[in-house]
Image 1 (cartoon, rainbow, N blue to C red):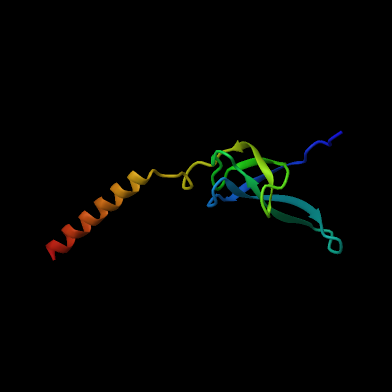
Image 2 (image 1 turned 90 degrees about the vertical axis):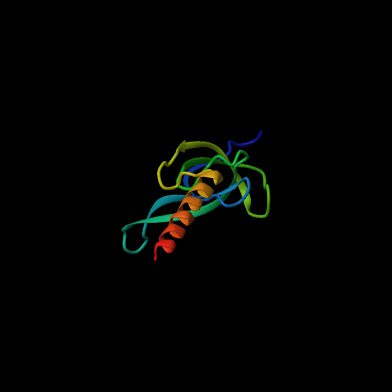
Length: 112
């Protein structure tokens, strides 16, 4: 009989790899000497089949078989999506913005 797979909830800190995200999982622990609660974090590489998780998203990861040298977790669901400065922009939007910026700068240089 197989045991239940462990799950963790954490925040995506990197999504630069293809079908892989780095998830930081934080936990609280009491310091053995000073008795103060300390925040500890661990990073896990997790498989993201659809490349849907973005930096800042809160995701649930589940233990799986080894998928690569360091990847032993799989993204099960995106619990909360972060919106705002981490939103991805389309490549065409970037090109149009840069073209307008260059055109504006050329006009400014022509006036001088």
